[in-house]
Every structure is written in C-alpha cells, then in structure tokens.
Length: 461
Image (cartoon, rainbow, N blue to C red):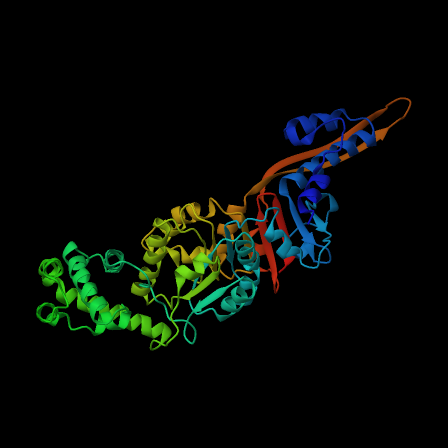
C-alpha cells in the first residue's frame, strides 16, 4: 500500500538553521529575529511545516475537497495533510487491512449498513486466511451474512430460513445444566435451580434422545417426579441412576415454577428469531473444527435471555480451549456485561451505527467501557455521524497534534544615514484535533475516516 512510506517520506524534516520539531516557539521566535536572509527564514518555515505535517499524519485521496472536508485554511502553509496517491483501486480496504496478515481488532461506526459491512471485509478475510474460526453475532443483518458467506472457506448461517441454533449438540449434561443456569436471571438462579435442570436434562435425554429449547419448555415439570418413578418401574433406570437423578430433583423441586417460566421464555425468544424448528440445525463444533465462519442472528435487544445464552455458550467453548475471532454487529454491548468477558483478550470487530451511544445506558459505565474496548484496537473506521456527542468523542480519541504557526514580515532600509530594518514576528503553538468533530459530521457518502496507529486516511470504502 505504501501509506507508511508516504508518511515517512513526507515527514522528513528539511535540514536548516533550526529543527522546529524539537524547539519551543520562543526559540523559533528568536531564530526569526536573528535570520538575515530569505533562505534562513524559509528553512525555519519549512521545518515548522514539516513538523506539523509529521505530527498530524493525515492523508486524503487526491481529488477530494480537502479544504471543505478537513476545514483547513486557504493558506498553503497551514495545510498539514497530503494527497494520497494509491497504487490500488481499493485504498481504503488496503489501509484497513494493514501490514500484517493476522486479524486485528477493529471498530466500525457511523454511516449506512452496507458501508460498515464493506469495512468489515478485511477482518473476515484475514480470520479465514489465517485459519482462525469466526463467529459473528448480529441482529438480523442479511448483508453481513452475505458478505461472510462470500469471504469464508465454509460458512453456517444461523437465522430464520437457514440453520436453527442448537446449543446442546454433543454437550454433557453437566455443561448443559451449567449453561442454562448461567443464563437464568440473577434473581432466579440458584444451586437448587441448577439441580432441577440437571434432573430434567437426564430424563429428556433418555426419553427423547436430544435436548432442544422446545422439549425443555414443553416438558411438564410438575410431573417430573412421577416420570422418574415410572422409568424406574419400567427398568429404564438403574437403582443408582434413579437415586442420583431423584436427589437432583428433590434438591431443586422448590424452584419448579421459576425454572418453568425461564424455559418457556427462552423458547419463545428462540422461536421469535428463528420460527418453528426446522430439520436443519447448526453444528457449531464442526464449523470450529474446519476453521469456518458462523453468523448467528441473535434478534433484537428484547431477546436478552437468548443473547445471554449464546454468549455463555461461546464463553464455555473458550473455557474448553476453542479459539475464534468474534464479530459483533448492531449489539449495544453495555447492556450485556458478559460480552466484555467474551471479548477480553480476544481478537474482535465491533460494528454499530453509533458505537459511542451503544456504550451508554447499560449496566456498565460507558467511559470505562469505551477505554477498555478501544485500548486494543488496530483500526477504527468512522463514517458520517449525526450525533455531535459521538463526533466529539471520536475526535478526542483520535487525539491532537502540536501545531506551530509562524507569521513574519521584514522591511529593510539601506539609506546611508539611517540604515535599519523592522520586523513583525508572530509564533503561535496550539494543540489542535487531528480530525475535527465537524469533519466526522460532514463526511460524504461512502467516505470514511480510517485511523490506524501509523496515521489517518480519508478514503472511499
């Protein structure tokens, strides 16, 4: 791509009488006072301008209206950006891709859905290229599903009309009971509820051979004890099995109502997302084994129980040594504290129409969550934002650069009787935003502000 090389070549400071990058304004002021030739003055100007340029590190595709976009002045010496001449036809995607082949965590925010989906392509591509399984959680984003399907070696779409979510495939009873227990609301979750779930799961596996959201919700919990007795009399349970399962039931029987309500609600949310179960059910472990991609529709924010179960399922897989990159799309992460645990120490991408607003209003403090999530980010892709608060937040995050402004005029008289010169000097140092909030509010169309540790590029995605 050559973006880093462009930054380096343009940022080299021209040798002169003073190096403005390391000298405060008062020394520049003194140097201007002492300068005797236009060449010396020009060297000082060049050093200050190169320093401004190097500190700001912002490039724009040639042909863009830089003066309008970045709110620069009409004075060429005040221009701390440069025309980026790309060698490829996809400079934005190339810059998001970066210099390494491994996936890097990223945040994509603002703009329209199709723009954000295109900006996520490098993350999906790199995950698959490096044989890293990808799991994407989204809220009904069909464009994202299409993109993932077209950029993966193998893909499983878990959504209405595709695969049905099967959280319990190949899972031992202890893990299933723990997964459901972890998903229960905090005010209902108790060791007794987990024990009751354990006994229910043991019976379901013997009676139906499988566990689904539907048969969990449909089983008549008040008759569980009678069912256990009937199974023992029919020889379907040994004495030891009966005693163990019955012990779980007796421990959990006070929680029958709360467990029944929880399972019914979980099933309704699953059916609300996927409809009635079809013959096609997902096989997440198979897709992880073949290093494929999985896109899971988790519905809207009202499906909090189902989303919590999916997150707990992924955390259980992580605890078993499964590694995968994570993509979250359209999910207000502050509403679900466990998402933070899911992402911590992992490679992830987060896409949201307003990432900043998605961090506030939940159970966690937005400021702390913003700092934690952006602390390990390799790329930030910002499209147009309509919220002034978000624009200002991102502008502050992208940082400021130390700008030096110089104004100088000199008039010399060489008369025989009264030679002399008069000088007007003005040197100002300010910390200015690398990218102004107003810029993010006026980005046109598919134009994006792409920030990486090496610099910032304005380009069309």
